[in-house]
Image (cartoon, rainbow, N blue to C red; front, side):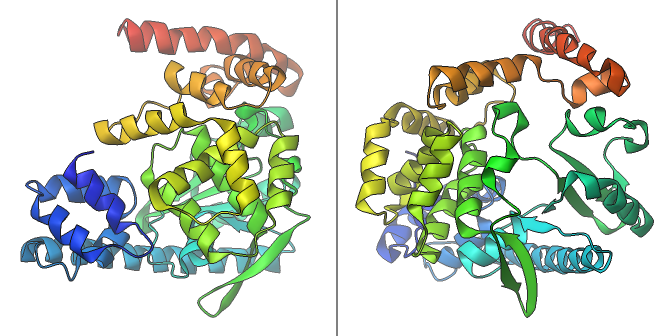
Length: 382
């Protein structure tokens, strides 16, 4: 492991070793690259906090870290205020929404919304409320990523997407309105029971409705495994979340994951957290982690981090890893079929169909994938 990566990992420990930080910082020759890596992995606030009193860190680097960290803090507070304003507005219109990821995760796991960078606001809604929410956002000045006015049918709108991003360019605001979590992984959102088990957290002095701790942790672990943990901040999230909530109902989480055929996907996040941060875990959970035999996945994530690369999401290596993480042949097969045939935004961009012709999107997707992967990516003819 190179010195830069080792230093950043030590910065993310719950109690960084000062002498180790001093030694590793003294070995760094390219601080600009380190700052770039910390920013890419979303851990710059933790790096700034850990390194601000380390004498072997050059003074100008401390200034750079402090400046960027201040900008992140301002950004996070700005986004959190927008989240509270929007949820209050939606509630005033009798629309129930849940804050997920972003400010909610930072408040729960870190106890401080400035310690975990987030680029946008994520809100979970019910499908029946989406169009009303979209109208409200458009009136406020937000623009949808794709032209939702052409998504007249319910299938074309909701079966081809998990979410719809909205942007407010003049204010630099980005919001993702979710109605599903992981369609292409054959993980039905209703099996997370998001609306049956909620909780209210505090963002500053303001209440905010979000997922239960157990559902939140399961969601973040599956989200990380979906991307094969390409961002180091996601592993830090798991460690901080578990430490922040010692009363987690592990039996409930394991049961939910097992019922979805996604226990190994969930456990990979826990195993990586233990691998890098010695996260305290109940003995029965440690036994499950050992029995899952995920050493090859740990080695893969280690290799990606050391090489400072991230394999594209829609790629054969990641697909193989994700399929391998499903719990049985049935779930592995379903995941593969979903990946190959379930239509998405790329198919929608190719042609607009009505709900009555929605079934044509399914055979269209394999042709689109052949074009994107073989013609464009491999043969480079696009």
